[in-house]
Length: 489
Image 1: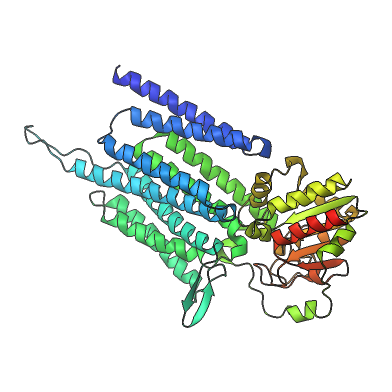
Image 2: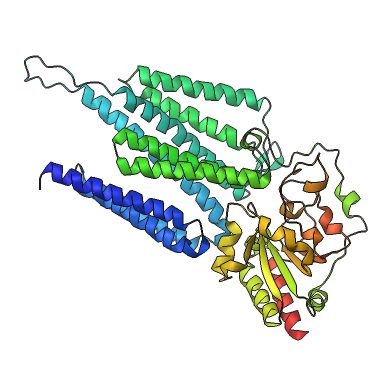
């Protein structure tokens, strides 16, 4: 088989892989087709990898096989051992790994090309060195290095915020999930960004050395940390979507570096879909991307009402038996899941209660806020894992107009996404953010361990409303007690 035939087969395989990626993304737009979409995407990646390694140019199959084995083992362990509650952190890490792979490949290609440009065949009478690295490749290398490095370190910080890591600073415990504000942070970040651009220019102007590339990697890492640490944990769904887009853009730039068509297409798809998802998340929070990246959620000015002023003498606690009595004659129940459901792994107990209420003639639906949890679609994934039918998952815009007809709303672990202050207080950190209007339901039962605030750091008047009952308990334990109480009633 000639080289032209091999090249043709490889290009056809890349075309097939690209089509599979596109249809895979299309499948992910609906829960019913999501599994098939994932399978098509995985098949597309398998075809792309197979076409690449079979096309030749492999210096050592030992390293290729070793990399495939190590990566496969790590991937299987992560997929099987990491609990669903930690999936957002894993997604953030995957974004970072994608950025790291991009800047390492681009850097190695730069080193190889520089070495090749210095090799001269002395047997030739008029020996001249090969041409230097092309300008277009240098621009792509600099782009991949900058975006890839900031994606890696920004993703590491995001994963730490999602996992709520803490550290001691001058005798005080600092939680990474909070917005960590540095004095003069905008000026420092601006200087770091300008330095990154200057080093990118130096890479282009000095194609004979790789030193400036590794300087760029360090500066971009600092920039990635600086732009992520001031962002509060409540904005992490937006940050994850944006970092996902960055990882795709870095991969796309690396595709131009190594002249790999399928990498360019896949990177462009990830970059574009990440930007679209970022825009969707920003709209769901009624916030601009600039407000997320350069401001913070949860930095109240200090002149808002305190928890004592909101809750004092107004909070009514309840028990599983009392809540079970509410279900005796209900016709419609809405369950609003939040991160508390994920932490307590309550999704199966939630499903059991929903099935029990439906068996007694009640209509049960799930109201899903776009940014509930720690990543886009977090609640959908948990409920799907518990075999909750897809048609019972209602988006916020679909269910809000009908909440006034709901007999009982069960809020499990959600806080900011049901806080009516977003509608009533223009000075609130969450002012204007679309919420699920559970306060309009006839009765609201909030299942939380305490009255602690959400990521926005502000009290929730819903907990003290006349039609609200607080069931202080762990999410999973609360629903198991409710199932028992309903059966006994």
